[in-house]
Image (cartoon, rainbow, N blue to C red; front, side):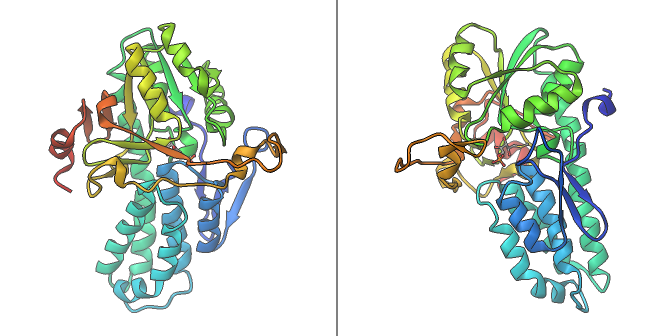
Length: 349
Ligand code: MRU
């Protein structure tokens, strides 16, 4: 597949002494980068959604750890780890639901604990590896996921799971890119993803850069669309996949999955193994991020709701494994996921 044609956006750029992040709060009309020169700035950028998407926040945090290490004088990795622990803890606390953030920092802690005097170089190499492995995983998942799709299918995606949410190419959007390139996907629908509008502001913009036609729908139009028979697969990413296959993803994924089951469409979750959390038994144990209700009370900075109204703003939900037809990872595909099938691919955890 022609990756140059289908994958041209990079949200995260390590520049040797600073991390440059494409500001996803301002897309699609303003393409601007935010320079982070210390780990606190990276933590803020993750919390404020300058950078977002489960794999992308893990990668950004890894580079944040590299920034935190600048100026630390330590004889070996274990000594450096002791000095860096508060900064790593702060990065980890930036957002609670996507396990990729915790996974990336745990991976850095492990390599640091074993590193010698060259620990700073080891840390930087590991951050780079986290980024390059994510891109390779996405490209591989694109092929694995596309192979499940019958030629001529219509697909619906939710939130943004593309290059913007990853090191590049994307997870669910990577499968859609591969499916379109292979002629398997006839029509792409994207739901707008209230309240932050990742679908409306980011996904359809990304697809436009690729020359892939996409039709935007309101979140509430998904069931009605599926009833028409226009959608064969709902293809989404994940922020955390539990040991039994329950999957946390952007709020609204669960209702798309219920509608899909009702109308005979299938649900595909696409995520790298860094999103799989075998230590969490089931979805009830995932912390769902609650964000400022103000995100619901305005649209594009303009207040749309009367003063004095209360709002409730959970930004993820959990789709039970029973509603998922396939979980696609770079290690392979789990069809009709349950604990035994997850364990067969990922071990006991
Ligand atoms: O709040 P966000 O925009 O970080 O939420 C992102 C999602 O829910 C994505 O679907 C998920 O992280 C997968 S990204 C490849």
